[in-house]
Structures are given as structure tokens and as C-alpha cells.
Image 1 (tube, each protein chain N blue to C red):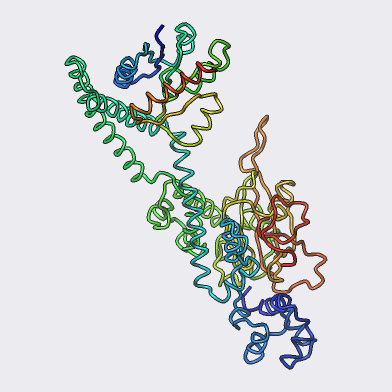
Image 2 (tube, rainbow over the protein chains, first blue to last red):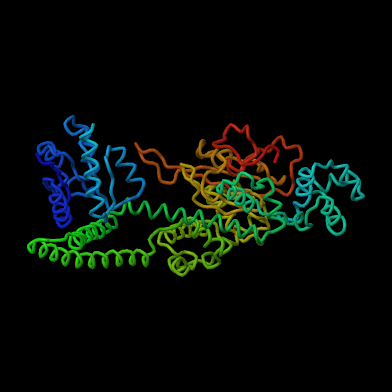
Length: 126
Length: 435
């Protein structure tokens, strides 16, 4: 059974690039671009990992993350957060909200790939 | 008060630091202890050879005794040492440093103020990134597009055999994203340029406004004459570089003009000449309120008034809104003032005039007559709590109360106050006991 990633990002060309990258690495990738119903989409899709942008239309990625941590089914789900802001305050906020890994844009493909593999491996081990 | 009238106080302070008894110093310079006592209490003037001899015994420059160093400068130096976290800095000798090397002390104080100002700018910019949705959105757009370009370019560069369909698709994306990046970058630069040109508030507006008032010696002959264009005065002031500072200064100038109208210069000065600096009497005579009289007195030309008058205004949170310093009374630049100031006592008893004789601890024996009152900033309204402001007028006292029982000791701020057991203390002092 293939590993599944849900990519929540409203920038279509980032979605396309990451999708290409992960598919080549053997991942099944679904994408969603709106924060408003992102939690419902995650719960329904049951992915192995979520890549979540902070600045989303409808609802911020930070709020989506907090909601995911409040739901039993998604409490332990690995979440890789992408943000255009790398300030320590944002990083702290994300960590408090329960982020698994925090990555600042613009990131390299290798960084994303490594982070996704690591997070999945950790989740599988635990 | 002219600074050299405090020469005696400085001699006493330096003698204490040197650990000399009054009789010892008197003997070494060939005068009686009682005469030295009169000098130390500023009851006899001193100069010439005797001053040089005393300075020699105390191992200081004579100018340090006659001129001393500004309390504000010394307080700034001590704050500077505290902020630097240098445990071994000789903070208890800040006044000596300022006295012996006034130029370098000013440089150090300026650097400290500059750092504080820049930190404030960084904080403001950081807040701006958080609270300015346009800026945050623009940066997000730029960085997201850069992320897309970077990922796409990496795929094109690093993927060995790429299907022509994917390759063409990524080329198209790259082209679209590069155009978008160019546009969004230009838009961001344009936005920042406009912000720069429109003088977005980046510094501390009150500081600029205070600099503006200080540049005019807190007195505007043009406004006193009546009919002055306040907007023009503010617009043409080189000290006011930000919109926020101009707004603050414009409000203050408006109050100044209103006070000047209520208490015209000539009759006001005549009244002062007749009654002296008697705020309540002046308020009654001109049917003005006390805050207006305090301001009017503080904004009179010092030479005309014959006295130096300090002024400080705060809001109900204790934030300092305006400061006109007076020699010997240190006013911290960024809040955190001593809660024992009558200024804050008045806040607890709105509309009740408070008068206290105070001395600032750790400084010379200089004493000040402080008049304070808090008043509601706006007209009272039902079901709405009043918003109070407080004002304190500071008059240096020529005659020092030797007994000291009626003198309330206050500080500048906790960090540079030596009174460790003070019940109002917020944080430990950086000074050692006894200084």
C-alpha cells in the first residue's frame, strides 16, 4: 500500500512541483488549497502525513494545525508546516500548536523530501 | 538653579565617596570644619585656590565639582552598563566618568540612546510584519513564488530523464512564476518606498517632539504673538521626521497656543513677577486649570522667568507622554520611572493637587519642589470611565532642607536607584549599597 501525503497549499506551482517530487519518490499525493474546510478534508482523506502552508485562504494553517491536534484521529498525524516567515516567534507558535517539522520558504526539494521521509519513518516506528 | 550653586553638594558627595570626614578634609585644605560645613551645604560660595585644593585632596578635576555631570547623563550611563550586562563595569563611578570625560560620556550615552531607538525600530518593524496585512501578504507572495521557482528549477536541473510533457509544463510554470516574482517584487519595493517616503512611524514620536520643543527652548515667540500657523511650524520643523512625531508635536503646539491665549505672555509674566511661581494663585487669576498653569510656567523662557522649570506628563498607564528635563532630576527616557514621584501619587487622587519636596537618591543633595495634579483628559460621560492624565512641574530648590524630614526621597528608575529596601521596587538595582 503506497504512502499518502495530503498537501494543503494554495500556490498551484508549488503543489505541482512537490507533487512531482513525491510521486517520483513513491508517494500518493492529494492536494487541497483552502484552509476553511482543511480539517474535514484531512479527517476524510486519512493521509499518512500532511504538508501544510501557514497562509491559506479561509483559515490559517496555524489554526488548522491546532484543530487537528484537538481531534483524536489526527492528534498524532505528522504535519510538515511551510511558511514564508521564519521568525522564532512563528516557529514557537507552530511548536506550541504541535507541529512535527517547520520549514521556511523558499525551501529546497531535497529538504522537503528528507523531511517527509523522516517524519513518516518516525511515525511508523512509534 | 545654576549648576555651580551645587558645588558644595558635590564636594560633600565626593568626600563621602573618598571616605573622608569633614574635619579631615577641612584640615588638609587649611579651613575650619564649620566653614567647610557651610560650603558643603551650599551656603558659602567657593572658587579659586580653595576649590583647587579641595579638588586635589578629593582627586577630581575642579570642573567636576563646579559643573558636576547631568543626572540624566549619569543615569543613562548606568542604564547603559546594566543593558550591556557587564558585571564588572564601574557603575558606581559613572558620575566620575561623566565629570572627567564629559565628551566620551556623551558619546556613550548617545550610543546607548541610539541602540534603544534602533531596538524600538526593529520592534516596530517586527510588529509591522505581524500587523500589516499588506506587507505580510506581499512578502508571502514573493517567497511563495520564489519557493515555486526554486522547486521547479531544481526538478528541471536535477531530474535526469524528464518526460517532455512534464518538462514543458515546468518550463511554462517557471516562466509564469518568474514574471509573477518580478511583479510582486516590484510591488513590494514600491510599497516599502512609499512607506519610507510617507514617513511611517518607525521611531519614538514623543522623542522627536521633545527634540523639537527643546530646539525652541520650549518657547515659541511666534505663537505668543498670536495668529501663528501651527501646521506650518510643525511642517517646517527639521526635528520632526515622521508623521507620528508631527502629529504629537501638533497636538502639543495646539495646547501651547491654547494656554498662551488663556494666559497671555505679558500679563502672565507680570503676575509671576508680583506673586512668584504660585500655581494656584495664577490659576485663580487667569481662571485656568492647574495643568495649564504648570505648562505655561514650564514653557516660559528661562531667562525671563528667572528659574528653570521641568515638566513631565504621563497617562493613566504611567507612560511618559512629555518631558522637559531639569538639571539634577533624572527623567528616564523610556518609561519605568520611579513610582514614588508625585506625578504618580496624583494619579491615585485625581483632581487633588499634590505638592512634595523631593530629592533623587544617589545624586547630589539637590532638592526639588514638585507640583502634580491628575485630570480627566476628556469631558466626563455617563457610563464611561474617565481617562486621566497626570502632570508634574519640577522646580529646583535654591535652599536645601538640611534636616530632610520633609523631603521625600525618590529615584529615577529602579535600576539606577540605590534604595534597595524600597517598597516600590520593581527590579534589583545595579548600584551597590551606599551609593
